[in-house]
Image (tube, rainbow, N blue to C red; front, side):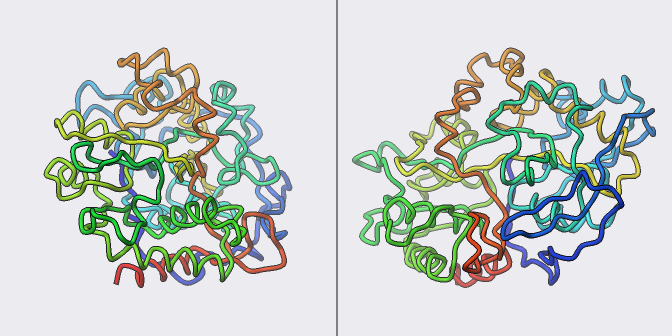
Length: 399
């Protein structure tokens, strides 16, 4: 299920993005935020015979071969059809994924938006030739060529799925029903000690999003692009919120239990957690607040040093095929990336529950994007706080 406790401090040099060497091709070159150069790495020109193996880094629940549940298997058929044996390394954090990809021992990775730009600018992943991926044409347009998975309209991955970070509350306790993120930031909240928040540096963006909507004088245009003043405002808000927090969560099972027991009555969540809590008979509701929300969209990316690129491409095409993508989306708890997957889900209401086809809903979601010193909102006259600064600040906020 879901994961991403992103509290490890970045090692020095992880975001040393400029001046990276590259191959002799130009198809992967481009300029990013602040004119930052992307290493020149060629796309694969054609898919040849499979090499017999593909080494995958993935979030738990993304690569199921029947060993967890015999009914949940979208690997065995792929192996039989292609001859590519899937070797999976399950990672617990985005930082771990970045470190593993730097070893050159893995072919593909299911990177989240807080890792993908690090991999792109670090030269660890190659641009993807989407013409070689037949199922790419059926991916929702709202996930293609976005800030976290492309540079200069060059795709660096294949979208996998998406979801929003919602506001959940116990309906028997929190009254009136909240409509705004202000409910978790109110210093006079009657629910002090029973408010919860996601345990990750990327949660700073949630505070920035709230300020973007409620403090226009700060002129925040993108919650992942914060200059000194904007960053201080967001971290100050979170420092004050810390006095209200009963527990920060990164383990979805603990959040379900906390809402079921009443130890938590209000805070951030995912739709899948709300579903599980409801199934456990906890009286909860989860909403997309009036300010919108942060969210996540994971991307399958291929290593610039892939030893098995053909099997890597075959895997990326397979995992976003209608049937496989439907299976992952249901098992994991997210909206599928392939629009044809909605007809393949066992629960025919799955796509409605997770808003898979509702672009107006996702237009209100700011997907996780790696914060860079070169502001990702396009500003060049200031320096923004990078992810290392976010990580350091998060440690201070929690105390």
